Image (tube, rainbow, N blue to C red; front, side):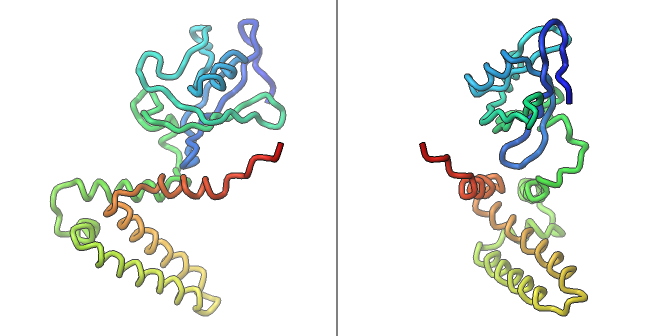
Amino acid sequence: MANLVEFDRELYPVVVQDRTSGRVLMSAFADQEALDRTRATGLAHFYSRSRRTLWQKGETSGHILPVVEVVADCDQDSYLYLADPIHPVCHRNTPGCFDRAPDRFGMVETVHGWIAERRAGPPDPESYAQRQLGAPIDRLLKKIGEEASEVIIAALAEEGRRDREVIWESADLLFHLALVWEWLGISPADVTRELVRRHRPEPPNT
């Protein structure tokens, strides 16, 4: 992608991505000053083409956007902001500007959100999640053991149906694991951060 030269300055496309979930949150443009400010402050800065000025995300709304890393593409003409959002990113007060796109990266987070809504909602005798969350944790842990055993049995099934059954049983296991997280007050993001910590490349020796 060629750089955009506008208003006597070179502008670069910027994609903002949630560092934990992988969800794409927004896109905008930045000039060199915006990139430098973002790196220096740890807060997202862009260049507004309509107002022809540098702007910091959240400077009027208060919804600042912490940026952990600024990554350039192979041609150094577009950038990725890896962010840790603490507020809604879109001006519509939604988590991001691409909320109509399939959120394949965040499906576990989405399921966990549904579970949390069920827990906070009015009593519903038909709600499986409410029944599980209202029981002692021992009951849920027993269910985790059962579902893990089902994954093992499925993996040992005959080849013609093995993959399908492993996928089915794995989804059951993840759902019940999300129930345990909700019971204990743990979020999928907590688990993802631990995975990121474990698999982040070690800095080179200097």
